[in-house]
Length: 135
Image (cartoon, rainbow, N blue to C red; front, side, top):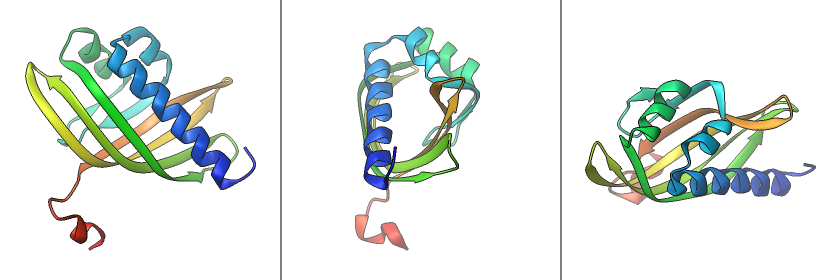
């Protein structure tokens, strides 16, 4: 990856792959994209590590209907990591309850033994008034 446009495209591709795996329900393949050091903060403020996230995915606590991760920025964090952020829209069953979520989100990806894995995820509910988003 040479320039920021390349990094943005790469981040978008990783996020699209992760979204597709979530919607497919493939917990094992999804787990392969997650670092053992994962810290996953949901838009509700709840926190999961890799083990708890994958377990909730496997047992049906989380059933993803659609995931639209729109990456709007990406920044290198050295040679083998980057952070990306944007807007996340998803529909999911959470504990059997239908939810639609629109959130700002930030992810951190790191290359681990030749494979890019998600290390951090933070989602924050989008403001009701988009004009107030920068205040």
